[in-house]
Length: 229
Image (cartoon, rainbow, N blue to C red; front, side):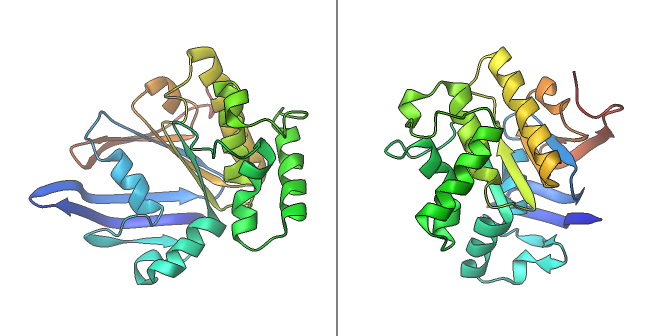
């Protein structure tokens, strides 16, 4: 079943079309790479699919719910409860320890600090960070910080996780570890995954790839064996 569907997406900035009649379907549990050079429209597509930007025309639906018909407040709640985000730099709060960084979406949704951090510590342990719950971002390696970011993205059991160049600031070996963790963790929870990248090596970890150029999807292909070893 498709959890996320986009039809006829157009996004214009003045006379520039950042997206030009783009269609996307994403089944639950599937990973999708959106690949292309700088300026191809891939990050704009991620922002539209995640309800951060409203398209000039076209529609995005999450499990049959039209994001375009929602108020800004409703879309904010949807992003907090139904979506998870992993960014290139992690965007962790430097003053908070790993468990509180991870628990933040739950606390913003109204859970008590005790319940939210207990869930966060459980997830951090599953991601190989047992014993590091009280370390702040400055006390973690780049790969460890991205694991915290993945834990934060998954802590609310989202329907879709969006990852924007999640290994762009990591060395090759650490990036490989993070990709393996990100794809396996989302698959285990049943969340769909959208990864924006300019790197074919990153895209090969996903089940399917959309290649973009100048706002268009120029090709689409499925990996023959899923995850790249």
